[in-house]
Length: 114
Length: 112
Image (cartoon, rainbow over all chains, first blue to last red; front, side, top):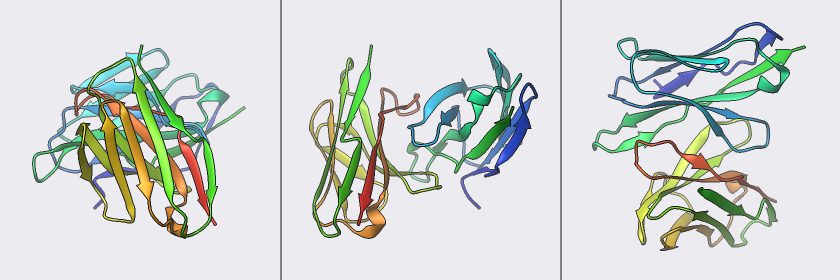
């Protein structure tokens, strides 16, 4: 089992609809969870961070965290063509040696259809 | 504000040639520094990280090496490139190991 799993997509969503991106992670303790957006050919940029169970909203983005289920999601409301990108889930996982490591999923490619 | 510089942006190298990629951070002291590689259509693979000058941890054994000669400088090197070394190389930094990582613009390396 991979440490961080995401549906690779592509996920196609009509413009103006809600895009829902999901991520599950291994059973190691984690306190910090990040979502990065990566446009084709560019470096990842942080769009959301979440540290406690529940929802966190920032503009059109909402991150949802459920530590008991080892599940984190990202909702994008009123999707725009500029949201078309690959979204990387990145929890900080604790290794067997006690080291904290930011661990990236392989990403979900999102396409917003005008 | 903090900025991270990475160069060159693109690089085409023949198999067996050496490699040197450089990354520098401005506006902060004693950052943690990271080198990642992203193969085409794949996820990010952590190659090396450093918590201080001369302190390098390797995540994946391969023909690459890293060095940190100065507080805010991180260098990725190879003596002889392989075809499999092609990819998008990213440098990143943060202050706390559990903190947000910020990425440089990346270097796209093609080994032919």
